[in-house]
Amino acid sequence: MNRVLLACALCLASLIGCSRITIAYNTADFFAKQYAVDYLNLATDQVSRWEPRLERELARHRSDELPHLAAFFDQTLKASQSGFDRDNMTCLTHAFRDLYKRHARLAIALAAPLLADLTASQVGALERRFREEATEDREDLAKRSLAWEKMKRTRRYVESIEAWTGPLRDDQKAIVADVTGRIPDAEAAVVDYRARQRQALISRLRSGAKEPEIAAFMTAWLVDFRDLPPPLERAGDAIEARIQELFIRMGASFDDGQRRHLEKRLRQLRDDLMQLQKHPRMAPMPC
Image 1: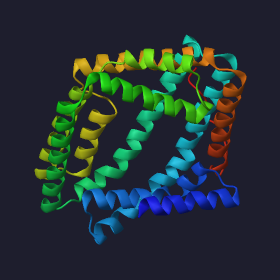
Image 2: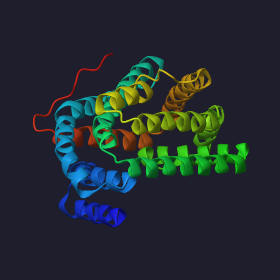
Image 3: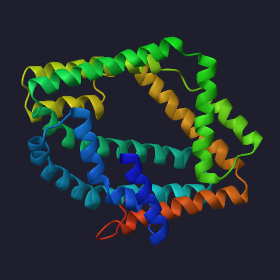
């Protein structure tokens, strides 16, 4: 049902001239609520208690976070115009990290009250869901071929880049294959780490943890990365380095048409994020 509604919204967007991001953003409360209801199997009274928090946090996002998002895409546009290099990619990487943390805090602010309000049976159902997802992840890992995974990863990156630039040439696809082929495979470590952290969350819920304790635990996990195993931390640093390399090498390879396509998308996204604000502004960038 959600996919049908989203498709209708996007069709409406093409008729009235609104962008996809505008439609998606203006229906974010509906989809966030439906996801929470489906994933946690919430009762009507639980949703009613949570809805005012959802409305407040989305209003805060519009006023506080959209300026940061608009500034990020504006800075990315400027980096493309001047040419991606180590300096502007370092700036964009730091800005992206900050955006992630800001949005992780928003997710925690929305999730913590819901988790604190779960009944014992709902906690049990959530634990079973976590266990089933971990089992599926490990089964997938056992069947995977590293060579095949690299091919799939390259294809995903190529498709993602082409969505921003238009079709890539064969030599550009070769650049993507080279860079993404050197991204470390940390999937097994991610699956194990996520399973441990989820079980630690369930233990807190079973012991009756209140919202502040749940929020503190999730912040340490998802924002501060306090318990991140060293191998995952090293993998994250390596992935970051490869992404920077990919931007720099691909940016240098773009022809005029690809660069125009990319910069048109970045400019439109920045402008959409400005128009969504009641008092349009861009937050200052750290560099």
